[in-house]
Length: 214
Length: 142
Image 1 (cartoon, helix red, strand yellow):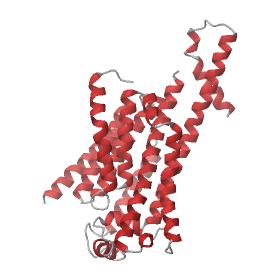
Image 2 (cartoon, one colour):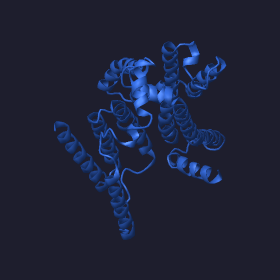
Image 3 (cartoon, chains in turn yellow, green):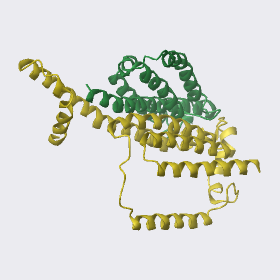
Image 4 (spheres, helix red, strand yellow):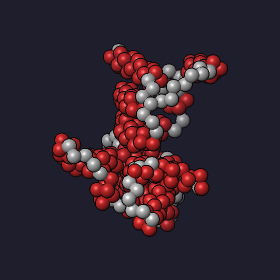
């Protein structure tokens, strides 16, 4: 009963935050509220006894993503562009898709149902074996690292590849910027040393030409 | 770079405990909630806090960009190497029981090493992402 009340409160909070994210146009506020959204979902996972998932959601969703979004905010203006045209068709499609999803939820087995298909397959074996046969009490860890070790290797490679991708895109850009800056310095030395004013405007045009060249 | 003494003192006090907590989550994952992914993010958070308060350059002095890249590679390699070693010992790929021959110790060692690899990769990727985003802006504004 208490758990139900907490769930209803947290889910209502989620809906409230989601509506606020859609309504506001200030991107800093959106970032902070998406962090709050993640923290609320983490609380819901704790209430569902999924502590590992809650831990990940709190650390990744509310922690690191918020910081990374804030770091990325330096590239974009602080306010969302106000959109004039309200696309009627997009609204219809969204509501239709939402209704279909709700319809599909009706067919799901109820929460915690022991007869649900997901609890009939390999889950009982994992639960029975993990503590007694493998001597590791946390079933989540055995499933993640041992039973599904190959999947987790794939996940780690995905994280690695994502990091490499960002590094290739952004760290490459910083290097071209540095080369541009060096060129500008040597050019300024050979030409006129006292051109302070246009210096602030110059880098932007330099990056633009670098981008169009690339 | 933040000159506010409150930020500087708090960041200095929190730095070590955050890493300690990360290591606890890392190596206690088979008994309590946690594991490499969560621990990696927590340890990265300590370094990001340091870089936010003391500046990106100071952060890069602890872990340079080159070392960071090698850490990313090393984590994945450790994970894969455990699989290769278990194959060399006569088991299947990532069959930890083959590492020592007994289920109890083999599974424990295998999971610990594999999770360490995950933690190393996640920590360094998160740090690399942060430095890539924040450093790009710093370079542009120069």
